[in-house]
Length: 126
Image 1 (spheres, helix red, strand yellow):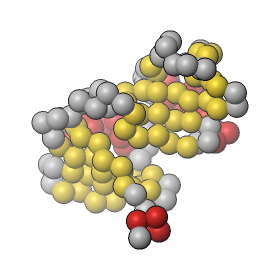
Image 2 (cartoon, helix red, strand yellow; image 1 turned 45 degrees about the vertical axis):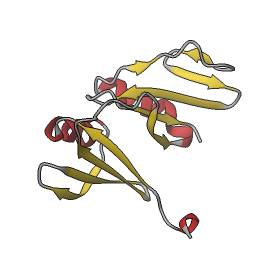
Image 3 (cartoon, helix red, strand yellow; image 1 turned 30 degrees about the vertical axis):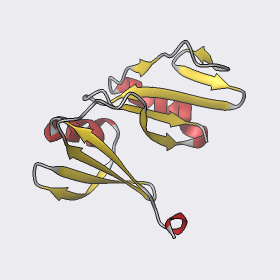
């Protein structure tokens, strides 16, 4: 049933114009559908990311979206940093060490950052 169907991530934002600048300009995502001032759907690899206007934007305290970028993680970090993205540093994650902006655990590497509404996003080397 659902296991054979693609899942779609949803991220709530307060201001769609501000979100559009971030998701398109900073992250480089391509819009595939726009619903006026209410929502934009973006293509991201084989996935879709819906960014929609909501009064509850930024209230999720957990990671909302993760991009599995594989060996390109360091390049992604450099590119995002050059575009002004600030990475989150979590010092209380069991089994993880912080190396610059990258959290590591064995061969897993991950970075976390926030969109303009405070939604937590991440990229990892898997």
